[in-house]
Length: 304
Length: 331
Image (cartoon, rainbow over all chains, first blue to last red; front, side, top):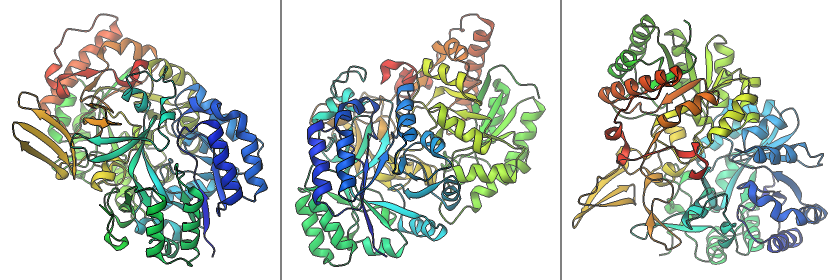
């Protein structure tokens, strides 16, 4: 079975033109099969990209990519809910990724994708979602290999796992980007747009901890399940998600394409991934049933 | 049993706390079994099956209902303990189960259709469409709302949804959307969703450093306290951190307790059906005092009189209180 390589939704608030150009390049050059597209983190950001939305979707589809529209992960206000209704009601030709149970409910009865922000930990939950139309589920980054394998063995649908990039850890009604700047969420001035890979957060000792992205908390470390691709495939995982960062994502996609197709030496691929990622600290702990921030030795030590 | 207009839902981590809550004026006591099936899976806490049976007898004899929280997410390939928790809650006379997982809700609905199902706060159902889904598909009668909503948003929600809404009145405060937070497992490997414990004590260390006290969780320093400062428990989201090289601050949330006593009339006017006190990890004396105070405050509110002056200060974490997300300015 060939592995399906997916580009997850861009989580950061990049300038609209930069975002457009990023996706145009993905369309033209990245060896990914699927591109998730749409605002997942903060409803306030959505209008910022409206002007380019259609042209990006068209360019990606013309390039043969399957485009899946992603919905908001934390839906609180009526405005948030209207955005979810708008996306899920669209007479689109493509699938929609539900990142909150509101969207799961609105999409019930027709084919859709479940995103990693909906809690799917066991076969019964997976089964209930499949009954209501889920055709693919991107599982939580928290799950160890054992659980991934049990889930995959229990279901006929495709399961997806994030194999690259900062991992979503938490969401809040509160905007931490605004709070870090001493301003209110209502008057946020879109300060999250200043940090294209998130705002680094350190302990009082100066140890790296997490990264802030508006109302979202991301891991400081980048998930890198590169050496684990074969093991993931053996476990029955068929789709591999790359979460976009402000680095050469075409190169990242090429590295994972090579690893997923089994044509790249894992050690060399990992060295290359570290180089492309600009010295980001890698983690694979969750997969190995350890703390998420941990790096499992089998993949080689993180360089100091 | 006839139910009150607005129900006071109180925590019990032990049989002694259950009796204390009942005696102090709880309308309902909620509790969990002694394993990973509930979100307060701490050593020395929670109920055996026999203790639940005794607790139900004690509570029901006094007109008080008992809810069993089965509000973690069953592990892949091991539904057994979670199914047993639902089955035994029904067998031993619980009045409702509080559930977060979709698969477990389906199991409860199918296996025990007459057992009331409440949606746990851990399901993070923060809007009308999510609540309608859980009601339509799994017949939930009530939802505990996540601590992300303002009072006006709650009022709008209770108008739109076919379920009772329960909200937190007093106790600990998660600044993150509940049931969707991986901070604890990211640092320690112990997951609130999978293991029922957040920032677990087994991973906590207090380290003296030349006149200061560092509180650590796993390999991370969560806070540093001066000699005269009361040291808080190192829950990750209540620590002091540097953001973008700035001064260390309580970036996520101050180490404060939630208290909505002053806004009780607003919550009641917003149409909530039940008010929850957090704190199954607390001792009997705490439960007794807090439940008593909240009972008096709620009774006064329902009677339209001012709440009695009571000093809750010594219960409050870090001796501070907040109304959290209930006020929009919190965001």
